[in-house]
Figure (cartoon, rainbow, N blue to C red):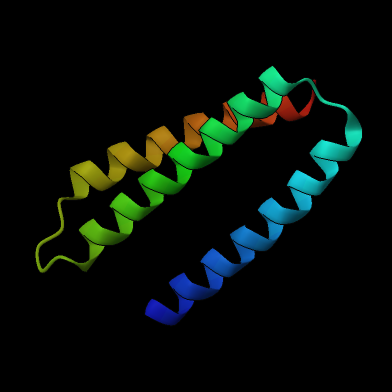
Length: 84
């Protein structure tokens, strides 16, 4: 499970780097870029909360579900900024 999480984080990081390079070269306004970066940070924070909760002996599935829903919503909002 740890190896899968490590590979997933590496993949996300690679995608973020590539995406950031595209964003900076495309001339997207700073306000949209900042909002997108804030969303990315929030998504990462929630993913870390999920990983920490899943490592517990008795994880709280309600918390995990709530956090996954929040991540889903943030990803949708992030996608809206990518289409602008």
